[in-house]
Image (tube, rainbow, N blue to C red):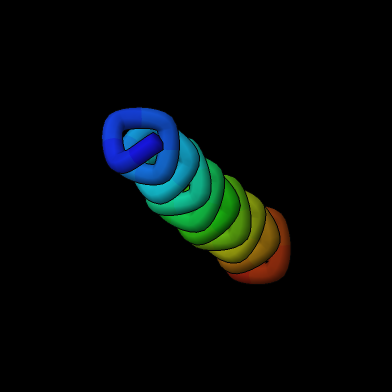
Length: 36
């Protein structure tokens, strides 16, 4: 039970980090296009 909870927490953390990286990447692309 505890191991599965740990796996779920890791999955949520990975999803949160992936979402932040995705947003940051979109922001950088937007800035590049706007500057150009």
